[in-house]
Length: 99
Image 1 (cartoon, rainbow, N blue to C red):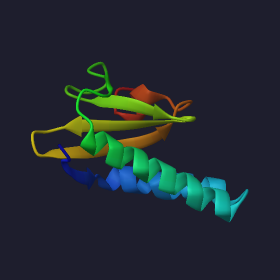
Image 2 (cartoon, rainbow, N blue to C red):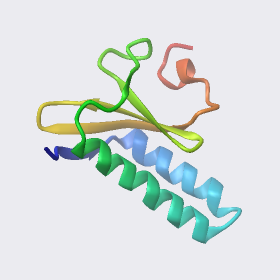
Image 3 (cartoon, helix red, strand yellow):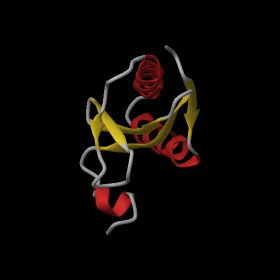
């Protein structure tokens, strides 16, 4: 069952930052990678039962990796909220306000 896909302001900013970083190397690669990330977000909205529980960062938070990035999301009955899209090497506690 597909849920409405909601991208938080922080996740949209993360996408912009990631795109800018990759664009410095190759604009074509950046476009392709952002398309892949967005497709992964659509998959998250369509598939139940995927995602690792990340309650240590925030109650109800789930995550799924995509290459060197991690997509953080919350699943509701009728929607999926993409909370952040972060490089796996980031300090996650700091990114989620714990550090």
